[in-house]
Length: 623
View (tube, one colour):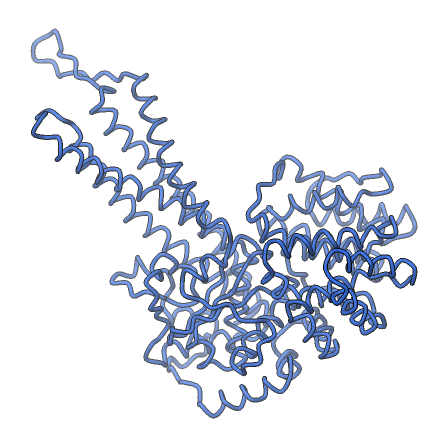
């Protein structure tokens, strides 16, 4: 299958998803309207008026004041049920992972199987230009499955069953992780959580009906005209129908997003055999992709494979295995063949030789040019630095070391701030780490932040707040902020802020979309081109790629604070709009046929802050 076919599959899946979401919204509105009619009809919102002329039909009158009051009451009750579920899921992916029985793996684990999982997730995340997500292992699940959960790349987690870890080759595991990363980058997690919350609101209609039915039965002897039983039965029926059709539409949405994630994973890894092989293993083993957790049904649409058996295809959250494999590998012979145990064992031993030891042998085939360059940066880092970043206290020291100044007087002041805010031992450790990284080029240092993320995210809330406070003080120690310092601080602050303030509301996303695009492109144009006329031409070329008439921001110096606010809003854009903006960013940087170090750091940071992978770059440019 050609690469163009996969782009076609992505477009079809997105188009079908939009249609299904529209249908879902119409169904919800219809259910609310029907509920309002039932409640209002019993409570006096409708009444029959006898016709004065004999033989003429009875007329019904609507009392709109009662109807509107009932509509407001019903809508408010359902909205509260939706908001309650939203609040329960607000802390992010870790809540879902723990709900399914996942155990968070320590980033510096030396267990061979756990190291294999951690290395693969680390490689795929860094290649995708996103923070390395925490990894959860579902120890008691022998089936082959995995999931991603969270609102955004900043608070996402990846869960993997033990069966998936033990029965897949490294290449197949890369395909599975790439599939889950595609879910994260495509915005599927936020969509899934919204659907779960709305379904909870629909389910509330049935719960309310059950409560009213019980109340009516209890008071029936005292009042034979009590309308509560009738309302209760009607709401039970309406709610049951709503949940039925809601689950059918949810399953249909999930199937389309699975096709989209499959196509995105192939586009990402450039190795269709990996994800196709993983799907074949599901068909080859007895447990398949079944998940035994009692909470699997609610989260079935999050998984890589069909987690819960369905008696009808319309309720299946995933397309049939054979259909998915044929889309990826049209030449597949239709036979499910299990991996040889000897091959799995040999790979496990090789992966445990050292961090990312296997990456060097598989990355050339598995990823595109630019992602290979990102993996090359990772592989070039000294093993001692990678190990330090994976440890909890080591990750703190590493982040502070990355912020330390080359100027000795300023560095001494910064170390004193670290000692004061934490401990002399941590300051000494940061100083030692600085000596190890000071010879590295600046663009090679930033991947260490991504490696350190799982360990930093495992800190307690107070410790995270302390890290952010100290990092801010260290950044401003010399009363000026360089571009490198801003980039580093943005990465750390955004990753940790997602844990401290999950799913925070950001105002003005649509209202300021145009001005935010103008600001980011202006900064890239003027930082990347010394000549103002050339910067203006680069901006205009990027605006043409973006597809909207834009005006450059000419007020200088540019405000990093305004840029940070703009990135907060852009992070809430749709995946397609983000992709369009990133393409414009790349066009701006590539206008003069080359990419300098400033443009590289800015492009990397901007794309990472909004959770968007960098596309193929023309020529021999590497980021």
